[in-house]
Image (cartoon, rainbow, N blue to C red):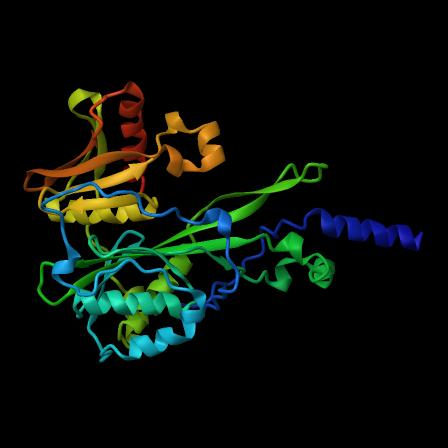
Length: 377
């Protein structure tokens, strides 16, 4: 009888091993106090980013090389982590004036440093956290890390007494992998000697399918953005760039929100979709760059003089057996996103098919894609 009762209790405790007590509120760590543990000795090969595709030519392309030196594509190994701080110390890191800008949940930095210094410090910042720099493009000021595994610890009090005792024995069932990667975009501002820095987080998680069945398996899927983690890493980057810890924390928490954005999806020439921003061209360009970062869009090139982004993205129509076998990169197409000011407070964003085939599937996709952009605001 006692044995049966014990088995019943154990069965009940294990049944919800993936669930948390919805009424239990886990206290969030304060800014600057969060314990972030990335496993730099692990790799996730199935999520590796393929090599850069051929960039479209553009005579007037915005070139960060006008502001920086030693342009080169580089992949950094994990073994160089210990050298990152030494490398950063070779750059003059005197206290810097770092301003935090905010629009909704979006925060970015304006640093009183040249783009060259910000680029090198940002690279060292990632390496100091164990990340490999997987993709760089100084021409457009873009740096992206590889994925690293992040295992946040589940608080014992959220597991219950019995499940907490059994946690070590069934750790694999509690701790399916979460992997993160970061993108930094660095752009010179209109004010000489200052640099805008945008940091964005993209996460994937491994989840169970067909739970409890003989063919139970796991798959990778996108994970909702951990806004607190992104803000924490922005705070750490801010201090790495030379801001005092206390000052950086106060600026991030007290950043005043810019004007609320009004973004509408409308019909454009040829039936394609367009976005209408209640902003000038420069601010619209800035917000479009941020939105493309949030959606993890492959920006291949950009032309600041003609206000265009050149992107590679897979249409929903093309996704199927080939994308499942070879990934979305095998079916990506190139498109142009063009920003044009209409009047003082109105700017429109157009979706252009570079192939000029004007397929209905592409027209439909323009509404889906620009609709996703509009949802970011």
